[in-house]
Structure formats: structure tokens, C-alpha cells
Image 1 (cartoon, rainbow, N blue to C red):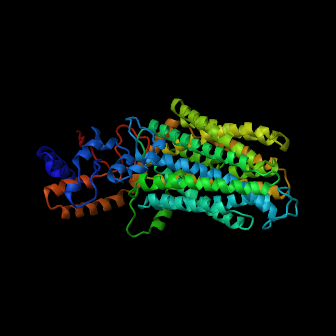
Image 2 (spheres, rainbow, N blue to C red):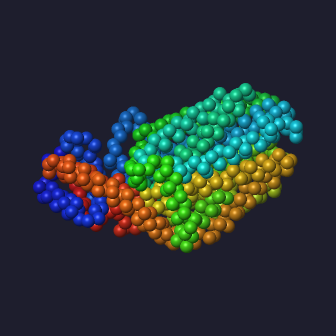
Length: 611
């Protein structure tokens, strides 16, 4: 059906309201979104699709992801649709949002990628020990590789990557917030991670250091990629409860895929092991894990970023006279000043970020590198034993994620966050005290507790990120979260390396993890109440949009002049207005009051197109 069939009554009312909007001072855009494809021909615009998409709702009630999906239709071949079915999560209306499916697939892909890093780390430590002239993994003070003990290599590389991530992420985030490159960044970093993981398939005694360098770049790319995909999460729904449901569903699927991946690696390790061939067993397991992780991630990441995620318009307008880099640095300075300089207004966000300086947010970095070194070198765990440990940890993350959902819904995310931190801190402290090479069976018990804590921790953390990010600043603030999460993430591995180089027991080095976690838990006590935190975010949004009002006014004035010169007929006028009065500024978060209609929004004119 074409716009020619729109009734005269609807056309007249629409034109009258658009004219009244155009003639008023301080024009602000109404929340009508576009479903039409961006074609010149009016025949490509389907009113039925527009009405069906709204389904009796005002567009003000649609999340940015729902609007983006309506704006940018991507045809998915039917013969490929089966890939997405296990990752679909229904919303409250019983519908499936394609970007939520993409988020679920991306989360599931990152699980095996991270776990492949565990097997690579164990293999790396073994190969470095051999090259240093050690007797297996038993090294003396004179056994060195590149000037350090082989057992210090993994933690040192982790520290370097963490420092680079801390420096790069906020600026990258601010640049993306002012450009159209959100999806591009996510896609390119996914490719970089796949290349790094794929290179591990050919690891050997002669090329392990080259692959280590590629893995370092892959680790940095994975941090950037994770930040980019997190910026889509606040857009998935305007309802906080729905975001909690999505977050739990994402992590359950991730843990299921990761558990299946780890189970496959465990079975392979059991059937392929050769008694007395420790080095060969490690290499074979690393290659298998890399091959399987690469295959899973290539399918899921490829499908998600080609078919599921949609492009986004800039969350902020870039001044014409400035470059993206300069705008990025300027925006970072302003936002950081608002966070650090206003503790009375933004108390929760400030203390959450300070807590993250010491929390296991670096998880895949600091915790993983220290734990892998401790288990491989100090406890002398074999490839099969390490696989069983990782499998138990991932299986127990599923109940941790479920408990997180319960605590968030029945109490609040602050309580859930503290429970997760306390569980990990206490269990890891006991681990450092009681574990020794003669009691390896205890590792399996503690790994279950670690898995539960991380399942609860990461699920809750995503909800907090989503709810405490000011609208329109998703990527930049995700950059800040990554910045604070990695700013001191280099410190535990560096301290571990220093202690290890001085011959201090690895028990003491491993004890750094609970110490940092207890400090993080202590700082969360200063965040205040959850309701006050939500109110503070609304204040931040208002101040943020006021600071950009001047540049937005210039942009809107330019768009208005262009629109007036290009409207040649009533039909074109109506279509162009519907398109122009779209959702480019509807970058809402996951928690909004019922009266909230997004930034730059004028009065609600009552446009509620139904079937």
C-alpha cells in the first residue's frame, strides 16, 4: 500500500501538526519513527508495515533497538534462520527482538574465546619453561626466558594489555558516540579476535612467542569488542525488568555454550592424552580448543554482526570545525570531570567506578592469568585436570546468574553485586590458605564457588552498567567502565610477577585476588541507595543534553532549511516529515519514567497509529 491511500483526514491532521511544530520557536523533534526504506520512490513505503510495527503503541514507547530494526531491514536467508533459534529471548509481548538475539549470540561466542585463552595460557607456560631449559615445569632461579622466569610471562603480558586498554577505551568510546561507527567497530574487532584465536591452531615449540604477540593484540581487540556490544544493551528495552531478563538469558546461554565447549575439551584431553608426554598433551589440547572456539565464534559472531545488529546514528552531534579525535578527547574530559567532581550528585556512579579499580572486572585478564599460572605451575595440574576445573566453574556460573536475577528483582542490583564480590573474595582467600599440590581435589570444590560468584557478578554488573549510563552516552561511558575496570587491572599481575621473581611463594601471589576483591567490596558500601542512584542519572542526562543544546540547535536549523527547500508536494511533505521526525535522538537507556519520551522531544501530539 502506498502513501496515496492514506485517508484525507489523517493526512490533514498530520500536515497541520507538522506545520504547527515547524512554526514554533525552539523546535524539538516528536517521537515518530520511520519504517520506510530510504528510497526515492514513494511506492517503497508500506503503511501496513508502519501500522503493524506500532501495534497500537506510540513510538515513544519503543526502545531504540526496536526502532533501529524497523528503520533498517536486513533480509536473513531462511536456510540460515536455524542458527538463531537457541539464542532467542522473548520480551513481555512475546516477541523476539533481533538485536537481543544478536547480543545473545555474541555473548555465547565470547565464552569459548575466553576459555580457549585458558588452554593457551597453560600451553604457553609449558612451552616457555621448556625453552628456558627447565625440567618440565620445574624451573630454577637460573632458568630465564626474555629476562624473566617462565612463570612470570603470562602475567606480564596481561599487565601490558590492561594498560593499553585503559588508555585507549574512553577515547575510542567518545569517538564512536560522535560517529556512525558503532557497528563497524564491533565487526572489525570481532574479525581481529578471530584471527588471533585462529593463529593458536598452529602453535608449536618454535612459534609460541609470535602467537603470544598475536594473542595480546587479540585480547585488546576483545576488550574493545566487548565495550562496543555492551553499548547495544541499554537500547534493547525501556523496561528495567526486561533488561534484567535479557541479561540473565544472555549469560545462561553463554554459560551453556561455554560448558559444552569445556566438556568437549575435557573429553578430547582424556582420549588424546599420552602418558609421559606432558608437552604434547598441552599442545594438542590448545590446538583443539582454539579450533573449536574459532569455529563456534566465527559462526555466531558472523551471524550476529551481519544480520542482527543495526547501524546507529551518532549519539552526539560533532561540531563541524572539530575532528573526531579532538571531540573524543574533549568529551572524555567533560564526562570524567562530571563523574569525579560531583560526588554529591553522582555518588553511586563514582563509587562504583572506584570499586571497579580493585574488583575482578579484569576477570578474563588479571584473575585468569594469575589463576592459570597458580594452577599450572604451583599445583602442577595436568591438562585433563585443568579442563575439569574449568568445566566445573562454567557449569556453576549458570546458578550464579539465576541468583543474580532473583536478587536484582527482589532487592536491587547493589545487593547482588556485593554478594558476588563477597563470595569470590572469601572463597579465593580460603583457596590461598589451604590448597597445595597434594590436595588438588579441593580445587574442584573451590572452582564451583568461583564459578557461582562470577556468574552472579557479571550478570549484575551488566544491569548496573545499563541503568547507570546517561542516555545518549552509551559507548563513551562503556569506555569509562572499561577504563576503570582496567586502570589498575595491571597491578595484580605485576605484583604477582614481582613476588614470583623474588622467589616468594605463589600462595602469597594468589592471595592478591581476595585482597583486591575485599577492597572493591568495601568501596561499594559508599554507593548509597539504588533509588538515589537512578535519580542522579536523570540529573546527569539533563545536564548532558543542556551542554549540547547549542550544537544541536545549529544542526536542527540546517535540517529545517534543507527540508523546506526539498518538499515539492503534499505527499513528499508528509513522507519526509515522518522520516525526519524520526528516532535519531531516541538513544534511551533501559530505565525511564513513564513520562520520559527521549531527548529533544517536544510535547506528545498523540500520534498513535493503530491497525
